Length: 184
Image 1 (cartoon, rainbow, N blue to C red):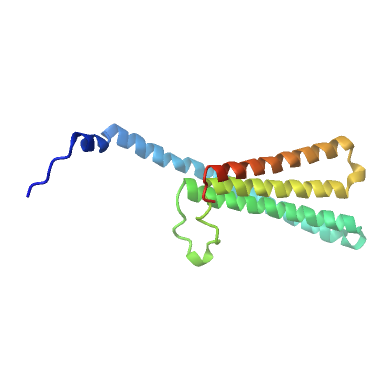
Image 2 (cartoon, rainbow, N blue to C red; image 1 turned 90 degrees about the horizontal axis):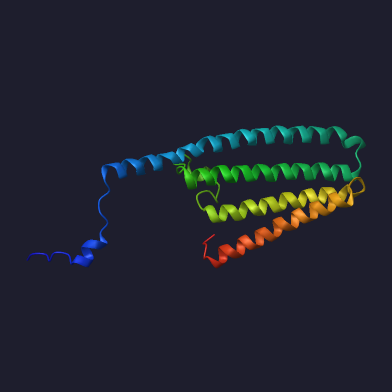
């Protein structure tokens, strides 16, 4: 038996093979994703700076403990939590960004990979980033309230307004993702 030739409608549904120039442009564009690697390496350096800042704050907290008031200890701990959240944020951006936009991390054994690694798409990353920013903002607001006597009404108002903007932005981003049917 001979096969029937495709109908004109079927033949037009098959895309034409890319030209030599198109293939080269596509390869070049695809390779350009590696231009993002220095951003992620820079963020790793930023993470190291956060570690140094964390250790400096921890050393300061340890040094003041004998004479510190309870509020000073709580403010110091909130600062450490704040820095920790910022570090988590950087790690999440580096891992997710690298895997979403550059390449999969093939040489990392499955047992060493964080559970979320490879499962956060760009939409989920945006939500997690905004949630972390809201948490960091809430810590700054809490620190301000613990030291309210040293702040002006205007400063407190601005901190509250900025925090509310972050919260409302997070809600709207989550709603828009839900409405568009995002999976994460």
